[in-house]
Amino acid sequence: GNSVTQMEGPVTLSEEAFLTINCTYTATGYPSLFWYVQYPGEGLQLLLKATKADDKGSNKGFEATYRKETTSFHLEKGSVQVSDSAVYFCALKNSNSGYALNFGKGTSLLVTP
Amino acid sequence: EAGVTQFPSHSVIEKGQTVTLRCDPISGHDNLYWYRRVMGKEIKFLLHFVKESKQDESGMPNNRFLAERTGGTYSTLKVQPAELEDSGVYFCASSQVPAAGELFFGEGSRLTVL
Picture 1 (cartoon, chains in turn blue, cyan):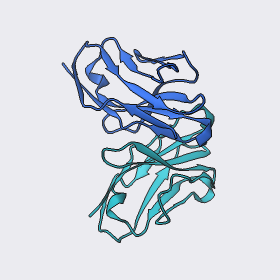
Picture 2 (tube, each protein chain N blue to C red; picture 1 turned 60 degrees about the vertical axis):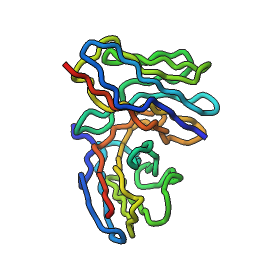
Picture 3 (cartoon, one colour; picture 1 turned 135 degrees about the horizontal axis):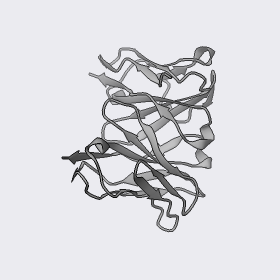
Picture 4 (cartoon, rainbow over the protein chains, first blue to last red; picture 1 turned 30 degrees about the vertical axis):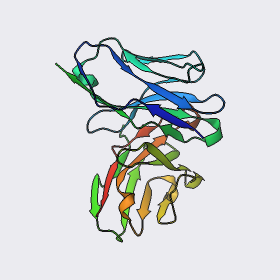
């Protein structure tokens, strides 16, 4: 079946530090990969996505590259801000499971001034 | 434009009682989804509506859960009777183009069953 594994949190960083949140997946075929973010008091929102191998998704300074050879989609940001404090969810969508998204457990990020 | 709204934000009930969660999707979004996050676990897919029809209900855990979407607008998710393991956060999401994978989520309804 389809599954997503992401690093457990919480992750605490100082402002301007480099961020990496690891995400690996298990799926047959060629799934699409996503990062969703949930800010405090809000619903999840799409941060970025990649639909095929070697694609790089990017948004708001965040990047993730779809690596089929390592089945990974790690999230990175060069310099985090306090406003990036949130819970980050890696997810995949596979044609063998309709339009359902398979999520990881989420990684909580706290950025301190 | 209003986002996805869910009600109630938090519900505390006794085991064996009934709870109904409501979701109002973004206007014009034919696709509506329910997901659930049990504490410490992944967010799990429950079901997908296209307008008023259930497109995929493969994630519904058992027949104590009933989802409806009358008239293809808002949706309700009823749990009857509730069990302890039903506690968690129930998310609703909507989308225009399901194939794109971009879902717009509500803040979630937290259900606590005592």
